Image (tube, rainbow, N blue to C red; front, side):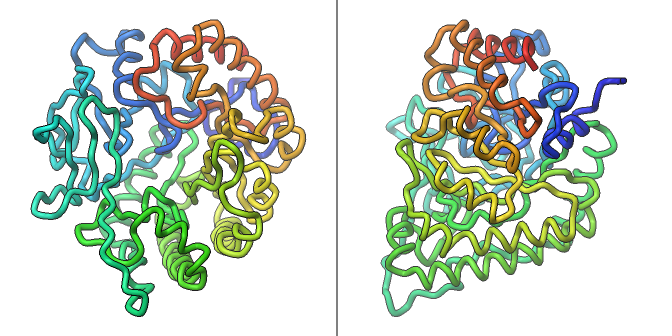
Length: 422
């Protein structure tokens, strides 16, 4: 039999059957990518670029580098994402200009990316690139990515309006529909990879989005701590925010599916984190009452109307919630943080492996990959693949993004270890 294409490989794994090889993703989503400095080092080691050739920072909030077509081919990657038009700071990924990371790595960044350091050496980022607005992000001097600047206006309880917290959830424009169709069609026709669309805008309570670093004047509940408290003290308010967001998300998905649906294989639905290192940070009751109904609505729509498999990202020890993720209709769980409480690989595979696909979990990016030896990295990768890949239902990726300052020797050991057992 001829080898499978990347698309066939991932779709087979998502059907819980073993493909010809274990599929792999790096770069198809904003939570399965690689830091720009590591992309640069990787391209140099693989001799894809001459020394000093910059890489694109395609996601400036986390400073992720572009995993371009030649790098995907060199690594044997099986998935590709529909590129985002705008960054998390609200400006377009266009008008590329040169910049250097604090470690000296040459990169190019979008034209609206602020390259002027403050007196303390930090870099401030502005919503939509507008410096007349208060800054919404800060990269500290010597840092690797941005922290959100919370711009919470004083909360007047009697004046809270649901409309303020759904300001950013709007009907998809005709222009954006055309762009999505063009990109999805191109990826479908010009690659043999599984296409991942991150356009659901259904990450209910995603704490990267709640402060709205892309809005010039965010209103409503925008402070991280205040938002979490509100899921208890203002639950009816938060539920109404989610209900409005869900209605808009499904209406947008209907329009997107009409023009681009046949070109997409996987739908990224939610990036909301529900876990900490020591287990879930909310009760099962809270998830089932506040989040699960809206997750189910999106997933049921997707499964009834499209061939898309749905993807949830949640860091931390979410083992007590996995059964509910499955009941809510999710097909894929990422990043599979095996270092967190309750997330032992063998247990996860035995308990849930026939009902949900694990996308990630391939190597620990907290300790092993950045701080272990190459041999320790290689052996951990082999153990994880052996555990997760049997019977399908697995896509190899690191646990969340490969972080800056990860030794290139360890990155190569991860890739070599995977190649030896995939």
